[in-house]
Amino acid sequence: MRALAFWKTVTADTTDFLDRLIAILRDHGIRYCVVGGQGVNAYVEPVVSLDLDLAVAVDQLPQVERLMRGAFRVERFAHSLNVSEPGSDLRVQIQTDQRYGAFVDRATVRDVLGVRLPVAHLQDVLQGKIWAVLDPSRRPSKRQKDLADIARLLEAHPGLRRMVPAEVLDRLI
Image (cartoon, rainbow, N blue to C red; front, top):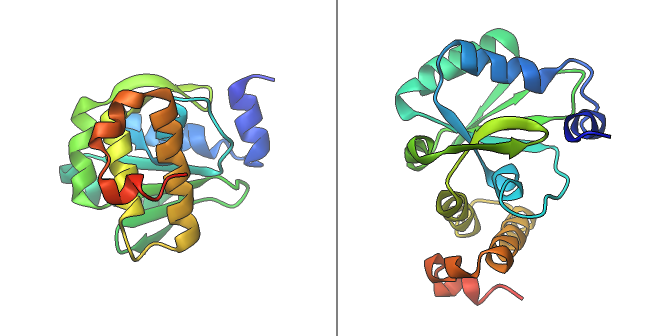
């Protein structure tokens, strides 16, 4: 089974949600990149996830929200837009935290979910995970997953260890 077919099976995506979402971004010239767990997966041995986290250029956030609301179900949270659609278990989270906007300009195209997508630079993916681990408003279970993602990155790219604050390193097994 090819990666995209596997992904569509895992997410029970009967509506081509991912394809349609990416087409909307592309057709409207939205500058974006993959961050979060799928960003980690682009650089290390992938693990299965139903989530796709995206960062977009800060100046395009209002346009992205309009486009997503016109095509999909959107819930706004403090630091994200959660985009979904009946007929797919894929959960897309668009970061509205402006710190992520700078990642877009450093992104490179890599394979994600069997699709070639712009992915945040390796160091930017790690930085996003560090921010997530240090965010006290995130659920503890989410922060544990972020710690595991940091560990995966450090195992594959030990030179990144210098970027990780001691308070995060101390929490790694």
